[in-house]
Image 1 (cartoon, rainbow over the protein chains, first blue to last red):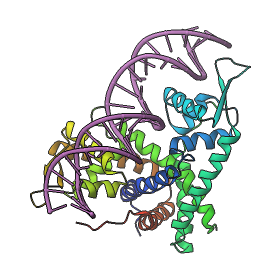
Image 2: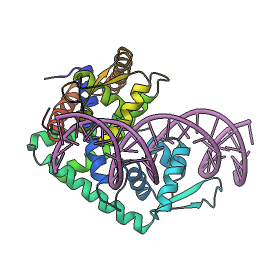
Image 3: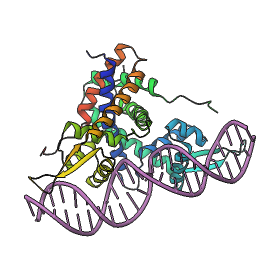
Image 4: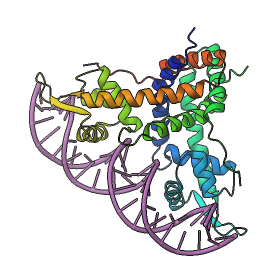
Length: 150
Length: 150
DNA sequence: TATTGTTATACTCTATAACTATA
DNA sequence: TATAGTTATAGAGTATAACAATA
């Protein structure tokens, strides 16, 4: 019955990178339909928040604006996103995911979910329930706070 | 009481990258004493398994041998690791962490644990217990299987 | 021939600093 | 003057292909 904070922190530090590496390898392992994890996160966010500004996406994903600008360049070059000026404030851009971007996002999401679900299939229901509880708790404490929102 | 595999997978896919980004930013945020996450993982593994071969480290961390070779080059250039030939099999190398490498590893580990423990401090004991249970379960299913071991 | 590792090459990720355009 | 974004520059992460050395 470990409830020691330091010990929990140590476990997180050991296990989270291992899961992450599994997700990363899975996402990159589909020639032509592959995405890096940051690319996936950007597409998923913009798909849920159509017309997001660069700043909003950078803030959500936890990158600097220059890094995000280049990441978006790459996605646009692959035809997965589009960028246009915000007519109300021409300093801003409005980002959107193209149809092709949505298709790839969907494919990669499904593949990754299958990969993860397969891994989880080895666990009992009560362990999976612990995972759900743990993830919801962790989501609340690690979520990057919204800036001003607009 | 969610025990649906697909749903657990989705939560994992949403939350794990967020935690990872927090860890990454924390590790990079200490000028001169900073480490990337892969560098941290390599140092921690080799520190626990002195004399590891390149192949063993690459396998554990989940990188290809060429990628690992370059990553190790960087750590050696910074004086954090050493590489020498294995006298029993001259195709192999024996990797070790230097004193300076151990010092930085220790500093970064403590800083990151503090960061994580601080985040976890916002949670009740039962949530932390769920996290411990979840991480142990996840560790078993995501651990990269050992190769031949030697 | 099989194994271990490195080099060559090419992208992507990521940051800081400096700049442009708009407000 | 402040904000949103891009460009310039640089280093790290990562892969595949080709190679060298050893077993």
